[in-house]
Image 1 (cartoon, rainbow, N blue to C red):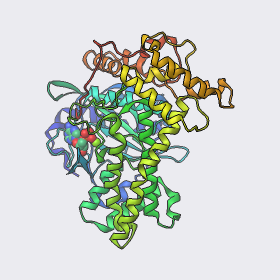
Image 2 (cartoon, rainbow, N blue to C red):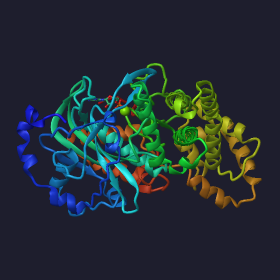
Image 3 (cartoon, protein in one colour):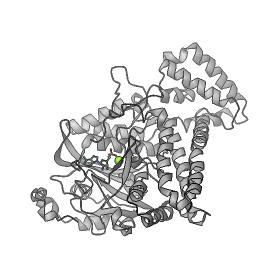
Image 4 (cartoon, rainbow, N blue to C red):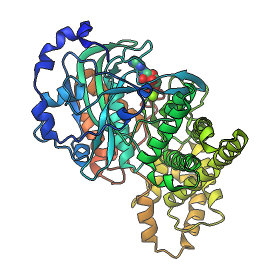
Length: 509
Ligand code: AMP
Ligand code: MG
């Protein structure tokens, strides 16, 4: 661990550090058991977050705290700020920065937590294990040339989008808190700094496997893989070939995850292998956003010049990343390389079919179908083609199908749409389930409210530039109840006017 007493940064922080938060931490109910810190030391570096000047709470997620068995009720704002900035941590935490590598836009790089610290693993009263991580917590041995810090707006973006994704029933890391640091970070301009507290099933990535494989540590790969099986997929240890079974399970999880993304119009933005979690959760929200008008080529990320991570390319990129994962497992899958490759290839080649099955099943629910019909694929394709041609809003077009008052938008008066609508009605009428059940199915699968990018930007600007969190709270209230047609949030249901559209989001800030 670096000697923090040598750190000039510390001089201004005596006040913050002297405050005794031990009683507060005892009251909260942390139960730490840090299994990752018991793995080989080459997997991480032990160090504390770098303290910050003047931490203040931006937002706390009380509902998430409760579901983790944590009690924030008696936590003062001051105590919360000290805790979630990392300025004062309970002794039971064993802060580490995790080592990993990654293919970034196709190029292999050694990475690691350059601006994050894993505080430890909290066990809920039900015995579920969650990583508690600070993001933006200062430099680590993996920072390369970065300052280890994060700006407020991107941390709030992660908070909003991750909580919206959770409400949409999409596996994701969660956001427990955002604190501002009282320090500025230098980006293109000076911006307010912040730290996000992230909760995850784990932070083990495809890139974690790539890191251990690249160091040539054969025993290490087995140790990591056995650990992952035990932590995330314990049932697989009984399989005939647990390592091949793990590959298949991760393929299945990712196929299901990415299908869910496409079904709600989500674009991750930076699907590098270091941003793909082995648990199957969406992780590392950077320049992510939801698509408004349907266009398969939609890209938001300002650094994605070639559309590598465009909306419709996400399944291909997931398969590409899974191939990198499979490569690291080869020595475990079979002692003979040729046989290992054949087995891994077979598993990877199954991805498109598994993905497609998840996507079609999701689309059928969105259209209110309980069973499969031979014509469904064409019916779905025709709707999407129509949306594309008319720049129709993806979310609104699906949500309209089960609306009590069909929206009077001009686009839905189009003759081609009217013809499609009649075909869809005919298809619905041949199923035996009552139409009320079909409506229920559609309402549970077509959100009314997604965190539209122009509304996210508006909320981030208010919080980050003016310290006004009211828009953020309102947006959060709306997007965490995405299937409810709440009249008070009807303004969140409409796509941006041409003048309001936001077409770029920025990474690494
Ligand atoms: P991301 O694009 O956030 O997934 O980050 C990619 C890699 O760059 C990760 O290893 C991060 O830890 C690292 N990184 C991003 N921003 C910074 C920063 N400001 N300082 C140090 N490392 C960073
Ligand atoms: Mg990342």
